[in-house]
Amino acid sequence: MSEENADAVLELLLEDHVQELKKQVVEQKTKLDKTVNLLDSVKKDKDYSLEKLKDISITMKNQKSWRRLWLNMILGIILISAVYVGVIILATTVFKSKLVAFGAIPVFFIGVNLWIQHYLSKIEYLCPSCHQTFDVTFKQVAVASHTPRTRKLTCPHCHEKSYCLELAKEK
Image 1 (cartoon, helix red, strand yellow):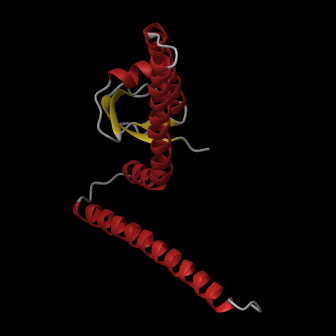
Image 2: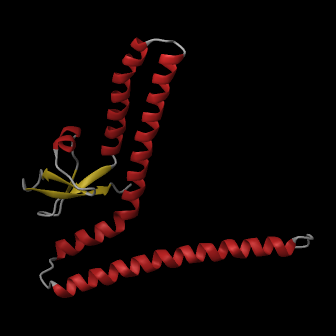
């Protein structure tokens, strides 16, 4: 603080701290809103079982991890696609070979398949019927109808087919 621009440095530090606190306030407000909505739902439907409440709790705790995992998945696919496009451009312009470009197609699909397998190793699904979590295979995921956060799967525990919630595995 003995430097000649100490006021400017202090001002920058305080502005950064204010921004961080504002960000935390927004995050807390979001959590509060979700909790109030959940409380309203619980008040309306008195038929909540302990298992349903446990599922809701797991979902709320898991949301940040799942979003981070999903973002990494999307970024990985974009990166693999960019590399593929680069190989195609390089093959057709520098090597002037459509054969090399054509040969890159299986490599692209192998890369995407490996990335999806990696993603699948980091997720599990929560069955709404028996409230158990389970892993899935690539084939099960590929053929299942889905929403952004669920897949219609057959639970290996209770053998019920329903939309199961996708969760990030706990580390």
